[in-house]
Length: 186
Length: 72
Image 1 (cartoon, each protein chain N blue to C red):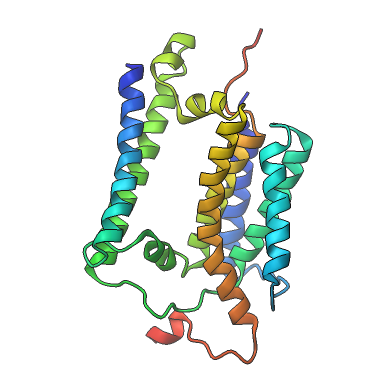
Image 2 (image 1 turned 135 degrees about the vertical axis):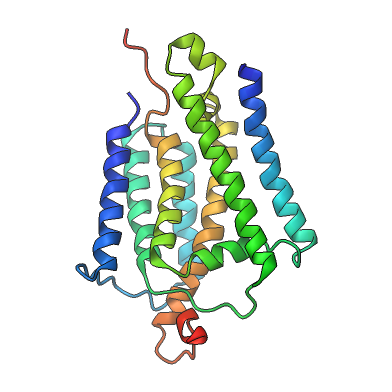
């Protein structure tokens, strides 16, 4: 059985934490990252990467690695607001990009949901309407498939987390002059 | 029907690549994805949701069982 209970519980708990944080009923105090050594980060990232690629799929080692990685990235994302970048695209170009990316993501999710629902009528239905999981699952059992997935997923993660981590470090540095988005627009 | 289902996934994937390519070539028409993420990351809920979803994709495909196992 797919891990729907775990998935639902995870998203529910995080949503609950966000609501409690928003209404001021929750104060999460995380240790601030004051510096990070690029060499240490590279070593840790390499070790995690090797485990994610070579540890047995669905195994305890991979599960523990992913859980630790999840706690770390959520801790980073929970931190202070990012610093205002010097050159953020604004106006119509940004609005158009948001609209188009939203359309692509929502359309993909709706089609995936439709395929998942239509594919629940047995083996023939699953063959006719495969969900993305049904298509990717066999490929991920091979090393090339695993490497390709790790490159795409890991690359996206680094692209997302790098600016958050860098701004967290800058925000924690007491001597750094900074302008947050809120301060800049106030 | 299977071909149609897969084709539509590929259309959406192609649209994402096309958007990224257009944004790189004409950033004044469509802002790069990085700028969209920077805008979204201003608020904590958006940061958490996007990062959580990214992490969940890895969990879903590498650790969890992504396809139903036959009942026997």
